[in-house]
Image (cartoon, rainbow, N blue to C red; front, side, top):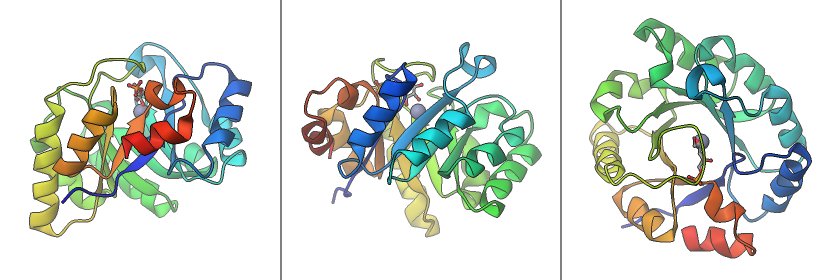
Length: 219
Ligand code: DX5
Ligand code: ZN
């Protein structure tokens, strides 16, 4: 049976800070999380919001913040984002030079009171992160290359979601499965059947005139 999908609209499509705060306010009561896309030029070639913006978002919403850190050396930054109000802090597998630092980072996120997420880019396989799954509350599967909203969903994502669901069941694990990039209602329906718990939506919700309806369609 399909899960009850949660929807996390992302901050990325909204480039103006004041508009972003208005957008975030509009999401209260209709979305499940606010997905904060923190990008740094050292990881994706350009920089978006920082911890001060995340703090402002926190002050404009009742929704939990799902912070997606597309940065190198996240170990140095996670504390700032937890202080800014993040509930989930998700770091990229590809952003670490060694496994020790990655484990250290996931434990640090938990020790500071937030939930730890691990993200993988489209070219990273689920098999590469198996050893970290005991230390995470969330796995974020990128269905586009990180960097910008409005890209086309990669079909190779479906098998990753199925695999993560199987792993979760066979180990009795509890991590949530989140998918990010290019999601429209037909895709979110399939993702939910395969085992996703949360879908991120950039352009689909942002461009909709009726945001509530768009979120319901995604569910
Ligand atoms: C991409 C970001 C996404 C993006 C999704 O790097 O991580 O969260 O905002 O936007 P859409 O849904 O338009 O692909
Ligand atoms: Zn994201």
